[in-house]
Length: 162
Image (cartoon, rainbow, N blue to C red):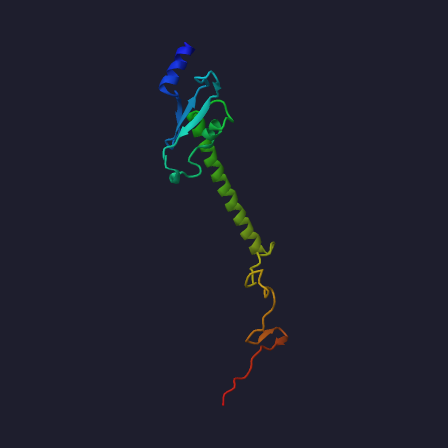
């Protein structure tokens, strides 16, 4: 029987077995191990037929990670619909918990800032780019500045009007 099926495969092309479809519409196929017309053994192959076949329409994440693991041979059996749904709900729960933890952390930080337990983050007062030669150097201001008891005159020059 295998000899007849091999002849049919060689005659009519490669027979691929539909394994499953994901929620994006991608179809997954398996080409079983077979012998070529020369008698050489050809390994089994796994492939995907994308829902959006145009290359420019492909986006990262358009193949679920469970199917990606099956395609790459990291798992033997293709994922079931129940497994996909369970994993998706777990991912959503993790996102919700992460949002809750982040909100609690922000509330705790705000409370600590208000009570004075933690210093507020410092604002950047430097201007310019760190690679510039004048970065960090104090420029002479046009206006005089006063800080407590120390007075610093500016670089004002009288205008020459005649």
